Image (cartoon, rainbow over all chains, first blue to last red; front, side, top):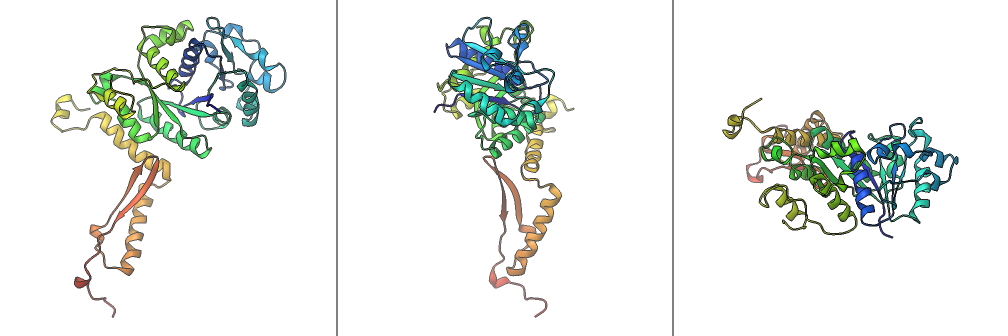
Length: 267
Length: 92
């Protein structure tokens, strides 16, 4: 069986889990796949606003688990892509409203009718995180090149291994190449050396992400954005394609080295 | 905060290097639950046990934590004193 259920998690909050989930789901759907994304952050839902679907919510994840509606009724169809769906989190409940086995059961039902299922995990290492990783085939850890985010990523990677959901894959988000060049920011090499997991994407800092979130239109739909390109590349890598890492620097720079290190070619 | 000049003259480490070094130490602790104090105690006790059986010079012993992938390893490098130059035991 191919891997189709991906959970996006991070440990630390605010590093870009929801943005990554929305963009990867959108990019996979643009490729014509049937994609369902699930907001597992019960009580603090946001995947709905990032996708611009907040006005369409009738039922949510907890309604499905507690039998108030059928799974299909809680699946909100995207405005732009008819093969993209969102199952929103409940906003007025907490993480204990759902158990890891509820999540496994729900996702098993979805597997039959989906090409890809992406789960947006809450921050933290408690119940919400366990709910989110329980049904995952692959867990993607997202981090920023900051000391606190990297530390929390390491902790979460250890927990993913302990739960036998490893090895985790890594996405490095909000890299600022000019700061890395000045040695004022941890480089992708540094982070990889510390965390020792497979890197599947480097996303540069991009002001356009804020604009796209303001509008509720994922950045992957903007053909000119570098962050959008980076997310499209990650989606292609999830689909099993060998995509070289973005050339954000000269090929002799660290991104070139990373590309060669990952066996994806420097250019 | 140092200036760029300080840095290129080697007077101050870049902030990225500092972050990496600090992270390395923090991750050892997070992954193994060993704090620097416990590590020191462990070194002393190791030297103690080994000295009971072979002649070593504690000053040349090098015990350190290394990272091998996601695994932490405790590496002990303990040079043994040559048998010919072995000191006589005090209480024989």
